[in-house]
Image 1 (tube, rainbow, N blue to C red):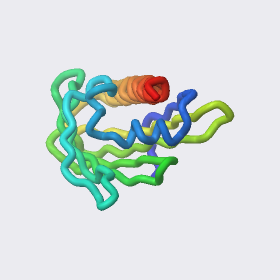
Image 2: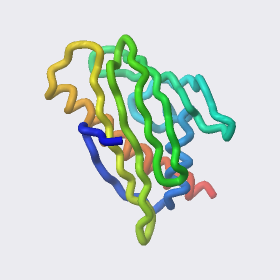
Image 3: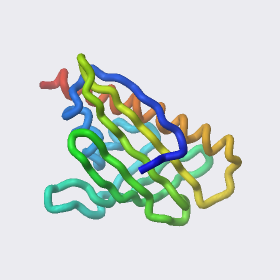
Length: 149
């Protein structure tokens, strides 16, 4: 998947498996992902991975709802795409988890096309803020999960 939106990286001391486990726990996103108000898991595959989920996000102007469909390549990558809806016309993204000497490099890519009118610079600013906050929250949650062991 090629994403022509916002791509950022971060590093954590947690191993890829721990970071992947946090990112794959879709139902727990409201606990650590800033702005995620609610997640409803709609479908799981035979292995228990979330295949489809509905999100409610506290947006800049309004609460936004959308559904995502997921694909997994454990423990290296989680990708998603939105089901077109009232608030989101298109959305695609991924997390990649790359082993480093002392932890993991996390890559987060996101492209969003809302179904409502918003100037391009505001859309891009919102993407950057979402990616920045998600990376910070994911890194913190993965490191906390290691400390709890």
